[in-house]
Length: 337
Image (tube, rainbow, N blue to C red; front, top):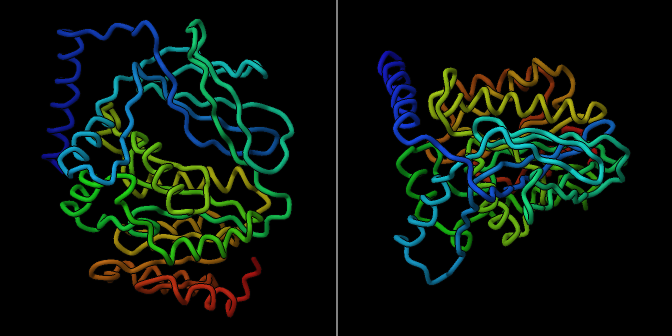
């Protein structure tokens, strides 16, 4: 921890020194990178980021790993633009980008179930208009689903840092693999669109468009994503922690759906069992089931203890190397989809 503190302080000082030597000037024509938003009682929450330019990958099946690596690395070389007002012109709702370029806008109103598309634009910047999408759950929904991504939906090797980095930076939208049993399970849980699906991941927002491509190509049920900011601030060194991020995202999603109980899906490689147990204590009675894939070496002692605690709370737990038996476990546990 001492080394991390020293590195954190050095990084803050280094970033400040760079800003003094090479101060950032606002680009003439900043652009919007929009993310999937979500419905809340009485409105929509739209999310975007103001950048100097957009970077995208090219899903070419014949592309080399070296080219994939260069394109993936470029996704992280963003130049954020702070202090910019972004407007949803039709409603007049607006927000201002923070120091990392992120902006969140709430649009009040009554919206039908399904996906809605709202035009956002940067105030005073011609041709900056971009479509932001947001999902409103069906009034017939019986459950909500929150799922992790890495090693839960998508084969990554996140339990091993070296394997995770290699897979992330040398793959493409065509080569990254969604587990076939995950596609089947999510179709089953979503029940033909009746039940809303949300994805929570430690992956950075820089990968949002890339993950959309991977999910769409695989036919995975679409849903709003809650990804993580990578940056340096007084209270943050690269990230604020996997558990804190995932726990906050779960709280946000449950607050957006006050009338729904939830199923949480994850894996035992990144402490999801412990994170979900804490969520179950915070939201007593609203976590109906927990589904855990067991990648790599399988669950450690802490994960096994958390799984036992979840079961003692009366929560249905389905855990195993794959998801092939999950539907049966949920049915025997009395879950109605």
